[in-house]
Image (cartoon, rainbow, N blue to C red; front, side, top):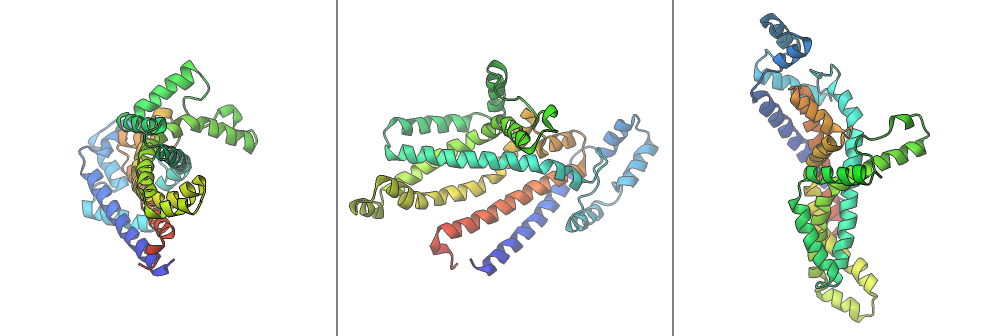
Length: 324
């Protein structure tokens, strides 16, 4: 792998993050409303003297560009400021919440890619068969159904009518002092419904994409040559066809990572999952500017890293791109 290419991609990623920080700051600060009033309301009163004191304490009375410069300098030092509402450093709040969000997102991504590719490959073997029709219908439903509606329906079905999975949270309080194996199983038990809720729409997309990609690849000359040489159908599908058919899937997986994080914020709210989604929801209601911008910063950071890793994976999978 060319080190120059990696350094160039990292440099572009830093420039993109700078743009994201500036854009998020300006959009949030220019939105109507005054966080000082919200903070004063939490204290039980909102006199003019109190509002001025709050603005002075949090630097809200300074010019907008001055506030932006101070914030960018803080981000460069990995200091995301102090939460207006929680009275804690934003980096501390996010450090406590980012783990559950990453666990949810990566589990949903893994489920959607693996199950979607398997469904697509099986459907491509018999384009006019039952599985192919099922993938088409399932994809249409997956695209059309909102993620929060899917979550609510799963809660009703598997947490109320057939109570086999928890409806909310990440673990049972009574098991927090249990051994690590029991706690891991408890987290996995709580993870099933939110992960499947988040994965289902992308599972449908990957199934349809892999089916179309496999159908195109299976019609290629080198596939016919492999079959003519006596290669088994398993070898043709997974050794020759799937490797080339996976390239579009890698690209879409990287591009959809941002949508996956956005969907995770909704899923966390539905299932009361203790990740950044709940933190963002509470911060938006209370106009907690530093926390909102911190959540957006880390979400953007994860998307940028995912895109860089996707580019590197694409170059590893396609030897033609390694010298470029």
